[in-house]
Image 1 (tube, rainbow, N blue to C red):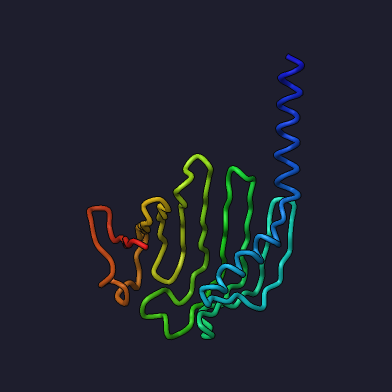
Image 2: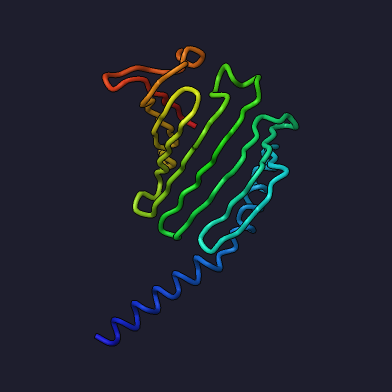
Amino acid sequence: MQMVKKIFLGAVLIWFGMTVFMPKKELYYKLEEMLAKKDIRINGETIKEGWFSLDVHHLTVSVKGINIATIEKMELFTLLFSSEIKIQNVLLDKSLMETAPGHIEVLTLKHTLLSFFRVSLGVNCDFGAAEGEVNLKERKLHIDLIEAKKIQAIQSRLRQNEKGWYYETSF
């Protein structure tokens, strides 16, 4: 019994150490570097690292030199086996408002090791509330609009079933 306690305690300490001392800032900079190869830039951010989290404030996202969005706050919270990214107050460029919501209040992405190839998402924006899933293995995105409002601009891209409006695409 003592051996089991020691092994369990050792595993917990290793997990805790890996989570706390994980180079979260460096991983964020690596993401910026990978996006830069695709000509996507993230500028003007303020980064604050916590024990289990990374908070990034005041981001400006540009593609090929054109600013497309400003993000007030992005939070990453991880426990290694479960991670969550919460993006708050996203304002898109006016030129994109016909194809996407102009203001996104909250976008939440969640990933767990139990569903390794799936990322669940929830969003609250100008078009209403929505929930969905990204399947990384099959390379599919599915979003169900829960409270659809002001969807005329994107209605041609949506499909409807007995549950309501949804969006589906492959990437």
